[in-house]
Amino acid sequence: TAQLKKLAQDAGKMYFGTATDNGELNNTQYVNILTDTDEFGQLTPSNGMKWFAIEPEFGVFNYSMGSVVADLAEENGQILRCHNLVWHSQLAPWVDALTWSKENLTEALIAHVTAEATHWKGKCYAWDVLNEALNDDGTYRNDTFLAVLGPEYIKIAFKAAAAADPDAKLYYNDCNIERVSNKSDSARKNIIKFLQDDNIRIDGIGLQSHFTVGRSPSLDDQISNMRLFADLGLEIAITELDVRVPDPPNSTGLEMQSKVYEESVGACVQVDECVGVTVWDFYDPFSWVPDTFPGMGSATLYFANFTKHPAYQGIVNAL
Ligand code: XIL
Image (tube, rainbow, N blue to C red; front, side, top):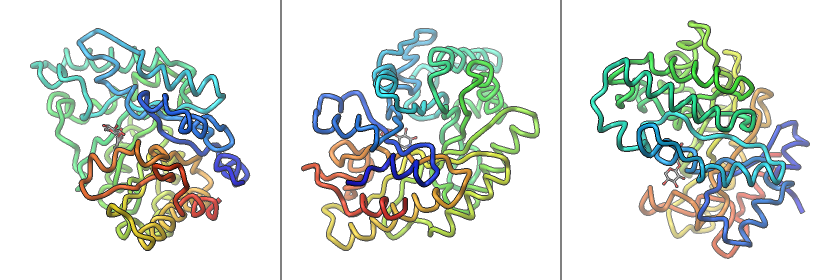
């Protein structure tokens, strides 16, 4: 039978991987697939490395949650993508609650990034240093970091990450930048060139690729967009691929979904600078989609009874 990581490597990609989360690891049938290293050669912790988990109180660090997935990847020889250092969401509440001076927030930001990146130094193939810093119209997202520090906070975060873990690939990761658009142009200009013009290292762009059937970018759109990032000297990764359909799905929806998975993985195959694909979990009961998008679901590769969606074969076709 086909195995995704094996096929991806034969297609010249570094990995095919998945996100996973601590609470999912007591399901043995799930874990058997998760740790089949010919299927998934890479893991991303869905939640355990986020700020709320890592630094729940100012200056108090807790790596236990993130370590569960990091250690599992290490035991199995799977590549680890680390997610994420700075994000407005799932932030520890104290960050938004305190009144900051520029000096104090700069110090707190550097302290967070440095401590976390140092903790897993040498273990992360890549760090999502900054997540979702842009609005969908391409303007900077007005979170606490922007409000206090302006766009400089982006430079502060990448500089601190580069200093703490020189071997990790440093990524900007976002959603709705998978086609050429105001937002992907803004990622190129206001994040990537913004850093490069100041000689600050950024190595990769993470295309989250949370798609909806009927609304996803075409294969060619995805390829053209990837090439624009590659032209800036960056590598590319599809970091959070899933494809939601109206729930309960019918066979038409599932066939459309298969095509969307096939096109997305296919775009990565066709662009040399795209290093790999991560699905945002592979088992419907563990997907974030139904909780976040009411009426939508069935976004992953396996149904609740562990039979495969047609999309599994779609990916095989692409590889
Ligand atoms: C999601 C997780 O999967 C959920 O468990 C959590 O409740 C919310 O966050 N973009 C990201 C991911 O970068 O971190 C998000 O993960 C999904 C959207």
